Every structure is written in C-alpha cells, then in structure tokens.
Length: 216
Image 1 (spheres, rainbow, N blue to C red):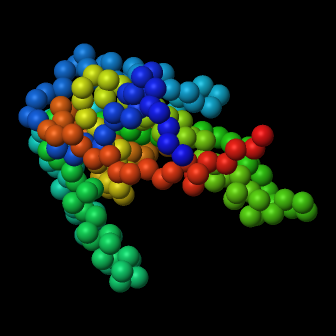
Image 2: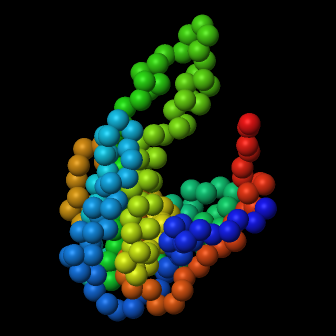
C-alpha cells in the first residue's frame, strides 16, 4: 500500500537523522523556539514531567563524549554473550556522534505516578498483570512526545537532529558534568543540534500492511 504525501504533512517526511553538522552556532532565539515547541507536546494529566538542558560549550560537549566512552568500556565486560558484547562494543561510535555538534540538548524525564505502581498482587491480579500495566510507561511517553515536537520544529527551521538514547548509560556522569540535579529526574534521551552538513539518513520504513491493523 503506497500513501501519497499530503503537502500539510510534508514536514514529517522531511525530517532526517543528522549526524554531521556545520560549524555554525545555534542562537538563543532558535533554542527558545525549539524548547517552547517541545513543551507544547501533550502529556498525561498535563504533568509536563520533562526538563531540557542545552549545552553549547564545546569543551563540555567533548567531555560528555569522553564520559560515554569511559562508561562504555567499563560496562563492556558485564555483557556475557560474546555476540552481544561485540555488538555493544561497535556501538560506541554511534553513541558519541553528538561530539561534533554545535549544541546538544539533554532531555530529562521526571516522575509520573500511575495506579499500578501502588497495586499488590492478590486473587484476580497477578504480578504479571501488574508488570504488564507498568510497561506502558506513560511518563516516558510524555517526554518522547516533547522530543518529537523538538525534532519537527528543528526541521522546520532548517536544523538537524538525531534521536539518541544509547549514551544515557552515562547519564549520571553527564548530569554531574553539566551540573544538573533534580530529584527523580534522569537523562532519558539527547539530540545533537545544528545546521546539517548533508542530507542525513532516512532508513526505509516497514509497509503499512505490516504495522497497521484496522478494525471496522
């Protein structure tokens, strides 16, 4: 099934994952526009359990990349499966592509209480049932919606981004470096930000027939 791209939706299809950037600064005006667009995303109960740290200091960005490499090397021996260890070892280059960007946006997610967290298993409700309810993770969904707004807004203004979650294993170290500390807030994603040096990547998408079910 092929879909004709409507002009009104063209911006969504124009977004790319950009990993190379021109050496041009990102102004305060642009940063403010992008974060304001991000925080207008929907969030459950309007909790807005997100926080954005924008890093433009080149030395700090380079140090963040070093912290990712160091944490990556520390974690590597803890992967028992040889094939998975090999795969993780090869990922470090992708986890540090932000190091050449003029700006990096660190995206933090905060607490979002859900009723299932307070439930105790008993007759008619198993631990598996509770675990299944907890898997929806609405707090992370809120932050993801904000990230999508940010990426689309950046595309509209001629800037490139790349959705990254890999480097978050170094979240505590990065947070300490940039001086961000807020109770129960963790680094859940980040994106490099800048003027693209090239078109960026747009991997093929699965066909609608594989990812969509229609119930009439």
